[in-house]
Figure 1: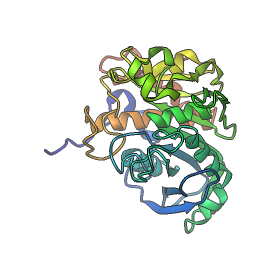
Figure 2: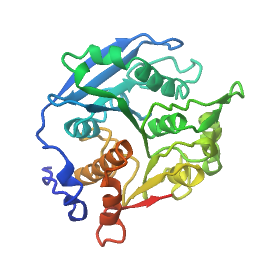
Figure 3: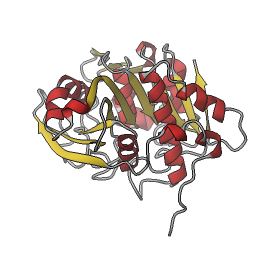
Length: 327
């Protein structure tokens, strides 16, 4: 079936879309970059995607989810997001976390299947090793602003972002408090992330005990929470807007983007033509990407009004694809 060519939504076209770079901007991808990491069962594999030209490029680390596909939940997935942000001036680094089915790690290993505590450690390692990682990509290292680093995570990747923003997790095995806060990150975006333990159904508490040990009250860094108003999975929670808990229950000056009619894959952010997508919509993918771009621009540059402009162009506008709330 042929798809309609995307035309930006009229309520966001004038200000947000005009700030985007040419959609035909050439990008380059380099990988795998493979590096050993302490206390990991396997070396960390990464892919770097960046604009082919330009300088002073900010870094965006993209943390994948825990889907059932072999490749989408790895450095090979999330093409619609990776392509978008690299075309708009970001150096996108994609790690393959240990929960990826691509790695086929033993399900009986400690912390399997989610490998929840090694995931934020992967991000911290990337920041620690940024010079070395970028030096492996020909012609890139001297074009990057290494002080402007953001992180975006979807689903279990959103849980990872929550921990990097300060959410404290009690290890269900050792009962120790784990805090992976990362102060070098300038912006945090969690998309479709797990909500608070109170909203979990009993089967999820038993199958994923770590999700029953999260404390949003310690998540102090400002975060953008992206929630689909149709993102309800009874295997995890039957509570409406459960995946928006990070916005409501944390003390930070957070923002909430509610995407109307969006389910868990938000139209297809995890991959082109993915059969994981139950609400396939190229327009919704573009809308989510544009809104996150506006947030990142304002988070990285307080003088940039993109996020405030986006709110004005969405809230209380008939036919808008979502709304923005800030606290």
